[in-house]
Length: 205
Image 1 (cartoon, rainbow, N blue to C red):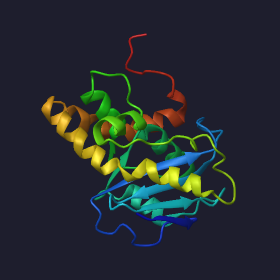
Image 2: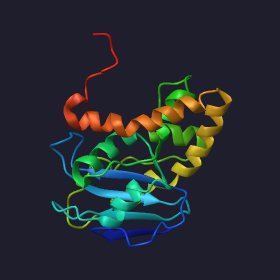
Image 3: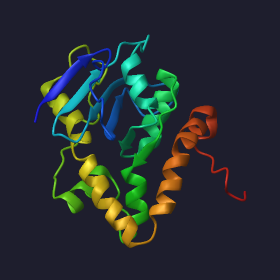
């Protein structure tokens, strides 16, 4: 297992031939429009992680943008709603097609309300993840070894997690419903960016 750090963009052709790529991001906070997108981490599910430290404010990352919009590659997230919104806001692209393990967990694991990546990975994969670096400074010029390891951990297990959740969704007869939710997710993210982040437009009130 190797963590690769890239400055500004992915190397060209890095994920050629991949059917699915796990993706996560780090930012200076969780508020859209205020907090900058700083890091994007990716894995093809082969045990390696690729961490892109983005150039700000230009965000000139054509290879990363091409991957995010490639219709032949499924992008696997955990709580993709935030990442997809940040990519739209800062990179100017609509990320699709997508799969969200948090949505899948909520549809399949109705026996619990614990759907964070740490909890889902612990139960379904036996992987105990550390979240110690989650709130660290992701905008600094040089990321620490601990930050790189944390960033990698958020994407290294998503392919296996997707496989386990797919089994559960099929067992519960909710795989079609999950797919519909994944298809809508980029639109939900765009609603967030447009100002409807705390409004349920489907609610009666």
